Length: 364
Image 1 (cartoon, rainbow, N blue to C red):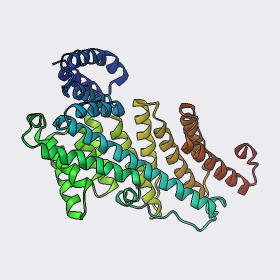
Image 2 (cartoon, helix red, strand yellow):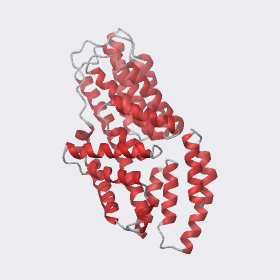
Image 3 (cartoon, rainbow, N blue to C red):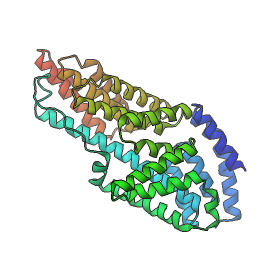
Image 4 (tube, rainbow, N blue to C red):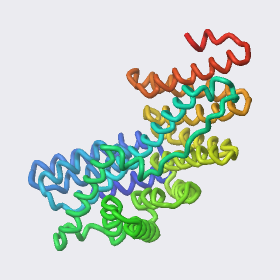
C-alpha cells in the first residue's frame, strides 16, 4: 500500500541521515490524498488516521502524529496500533519533560550558587554544586510528569486489555514487550517493576533494533550515564537522522558532566560531547527553541567550571549568549532564554569586576 511504501521510504532516508523536510514534501501529499479518499469512503475507519500519524512520527512531527492517533481512537477506542502509537508518543513527551526538569534544576542550582556569591568571586567562593536528584525523584515532584505517566498507563493497559481484537495482530512481539514495559514503568511501585520493565525494553531492542521507541526506553532505563550513552551511540549509527537519539545522548553527556563536577573530575570532555550532540540535533531540527537553550546551558556550566578554577570563561559564555540569542530570534517570548542570558551576563560581568575590568557592556 502507499502508506507502507511511503513509510518505509521515509525511514530509509532518515536512517541514512537524509533531509526530512524534502522527504515530507515528496511523500506526504500522496499519502494525505489517499487518506482523504479513504475517509470519504469509510468515515468510521480508524486506519487512515493511524497511517497518517505513523508517517508523522517517522518524520518527527510528533504533535501532528498524536493528533491523528487521537482522531483514530475517537473512531475506534480499541484500535490497537493507534493505542500503541499514542502510548509511545506519550512516552516521548515524558522523556522530553524529564530532560526539561533536569535543565530547570541545573538552572536553579546555578542561581543558588550565584546568589551565594560562589561565582561572583571568580572561584573564591566556597559553595559547591549539589548532587542532582534522580529522574524518578524529579518526575515524582512534577504534576506534568504524573499526568503523562497516567496517560501512558491508560493507553498501555487498554491495549493489553484489547486481547483478541483483530487489530492486535498488527503489533509485533517486540511491540507487545514495549507495551508491557511502558505499563510497568508508568505504574512502578517497586524496584522489581522497574527491573522487569528494563529487561523487556532490552529484549524488544534486541529483537527489533529499528524500533526507536524500544531504543529510547532502553537507554533511559539504564543504570548509568555511561551505559545510556553507549545505547544511544549504537542507535545513532543505525539511524543518523533521528533527532531524539542525539537529544538523549546530549542530555546523558550533560548530566554525566555535572556528576563529574561533584567528584572534582574535569567535565570538559563530556560537556564538549554534549555540545556536539546538541549541534547534530540542531542540524536536523534548527527551529527547535529548547535545543538552543539546552546547548546554551552546557556552555554556561562549562564556563562556570572554568571560572571557578580561575580560568577564562569568555569563549564559552560568548557561545552561550549566542545560543540564547538564536532561541530568542525564534521565540522572542522564551523566558528561559531571557533569564539564562541575563544570568550569564551577570556572572561574566562579576568576573570582569573581580579582574579589574569594566563590565558595563555586559551589565547593560
